[in-house]
Image (cartoon, rainbow, N blue to C red; front, side, top):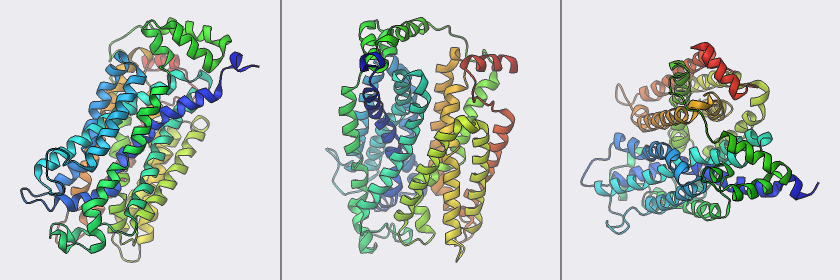
Length: 489
């Protein structure tokens, strides 16, 4: 069968790969802080006009997530009014501006290398700008892929966006590792005592290293913003603005001419969708979607992803960036487990077993952290904790949020669920450092065991929540979900 009759797989793969770059940037931007945050903290602790506390550092490390909330809230409006392609171009430009601005927040307005409160505000503004790009990409990249992909492989292609997010985190772990090179991260006890009193091998990290880490994102961001200009708009959006002729050509190139006409008609038939009030199917429907997002973040995974080098360094590891990179590889492998088993094992079993595995890992960290001779057990517990998330709550939450809501309320319900996800991401990320450093008495490890003990308890609550309230969506059509929620009202 000719390419004209069957469509071009290479064309489809090429445009999906460009869209997937948005997912990679999502992961890159949210995890770049992991290698840069200690140098950044030491830099701002040199400020003379304010005290850079743990609270300020927690906020600064998580400030991009404020932008994520804004970006996800704007995504529906922009995708509808500007189109999926233009919205992704905007996201790419925001990533690019954020990378360069975070590298040199002094640009135009401040003295280079002089930490001040005003400079801290400017740095956080640039991070929020990048966060808006993440929020847009988190919603629109899966939407773009879903709208260009043939129905028989749509689920698989959308799932690869989650893989790209984790891969982006792994890439930035490697990039941070190579940028750091022979230099080291500053010790906590050295911070705030003056740059001259910081270990010579760490001084470069404080003055320059964190800048290169943030700036490195400009390369993939610029590439994404450029390449997205060459992909087509989605056929569904084109039909919505009356460009049926262009939509037909794109559909023919992807699916073949024999299928294009039928798909085009199906799109036109579903463009006018009956809308219903958000609570039409009962409060439980919305509650389950929101709590899936809340638990995905409340289990504390991003505290590990964002602060991995700090955690491994505080454990006494000689080169924490090496362990961080290894953890990134483990994360990739266990994300693949989810991609290839979700349709075989189902959503609920993966979430429940993942919750149990995370609880075991979190309690393992709480019990062994700081104990002499148990550093390997602590590191292994963190790996179990992260790996369990990657085959469960990481990808499966996104799958369920896409499936669980009836068609007629999906747009509004998904927007609410995703907004809660970013809100709790911010809460967990901004509170980790202050909680982790809590002491009941001088020199004790109260903050360490309390933080991971709390995460472990939340993991167990998540398992009970899934067992009791979350429906299994494996093998069910969207129409089945509509009927199910009606029966559960």
